[in-house]
Amino acid sequence: MGAKAAERLKLSKVSFRHGDARRAYSTGDIFYFYAPFGGKALDQVLDKLRKLSLKKPMHVVWTGPFQEQVDAQPWLKALSGKQSGLDLGSTVSVYRSRG
View 1 (cartoon, rainbow, N blue to C red):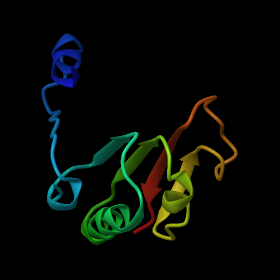
View 2: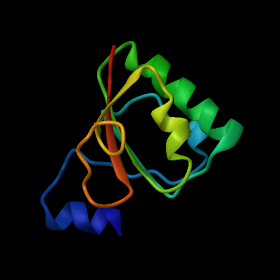
View 3: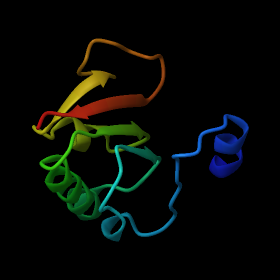
View 4: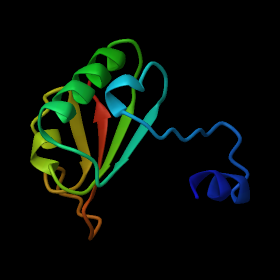
């Protein structure tokens, strides 16, 4: 579904990956999570993203439960959502890395 949308929009530098998020990240600028996981698995993914953000800026887009766990990350600045003051009218929140 995502690949077809990217093709329709003529986006050539977009890739979609499906799999265990704890093993997935070594590159990327924008990471979109739709109704993902929480708990220890989310902690592991956020730690990997934090380390990657030390090398280059990134954005994290979050839709779904466990929002508070993402909001609590000091290395992420909320651009939209509850903490930013810009409510997009849904459960979508956008963050930018601080580093």
